[in-house]
Image 1 (cartoon, rainbow, N blue to C red):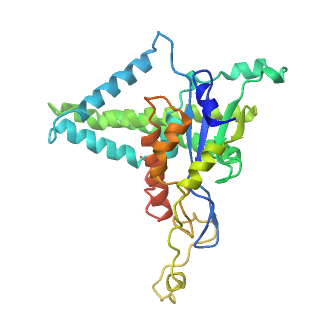
Image 2 (image 1 turned 180 degrees about the horizontal axis):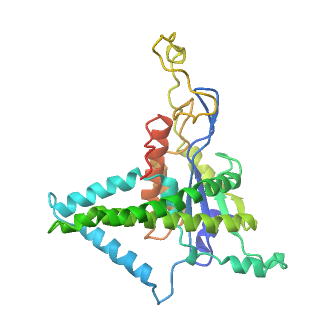
Image 3 (image 1 turned 90 degrees about the vertical axis):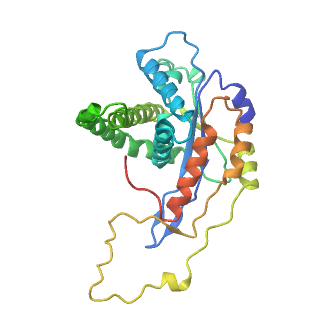
Length: 311
């Protein structure tokens, strides 16, 4: 299915766009690092006039936060907004991608169960990807969902339990209780990502997510393909003789450190505007900001500078 035809049908169906960021690469100990892929979820617009209380609260909080960003330079609201945006940039792009998926706007799993006997009526979710940049991303999406679901469930309960401990900060006059709002926001973010993981896992189990190649994405990847990162020099690969005080080498089963030899990015930030135009995304889409963040995090992880802290 061409991407532009899928864009015209975006108001009636859900689609997933897979953008590979790095290929599998050899690590320093000979292991292969898992490639990074950003997933963007396009769902039909919410045309319902009734709004749940949760959506109302989220909308009010978003408007309030946007108002902080419009405050004059130097004002405490503006400084708080800039610091909060930096915190968001530190969150893993995988979580932010999952959090952006609202299951209530996508197809219902009950439709797939009810039509299981009618293959022609089975609703499917296209997983659009560039075939020259990667093989089918379906196994990677399955692994991603399975790994992140328990992580976000744990994060939801952790930040929810921590939030009451910030009550004493409410005694400080004038300035809002930012620690409390941060804990609630982190709990909500993990909850959204967890529910999205459950939603995708159910569709994957039913075989309702179908990979579809895109020649248009292939052309963009070929046009904006960056060069490889510089490989380490021979002197850097050759380890110095260990001293008697040196720490023992890591065991084979320990976590592989960040930084891959010969690894490279598959996409540059210059490609984002053309991607946005080609995919025909809605005007209020956060696609550009999300992909910029994902590319930057992928670059830092390749260089071994990625932030491993789970906020």
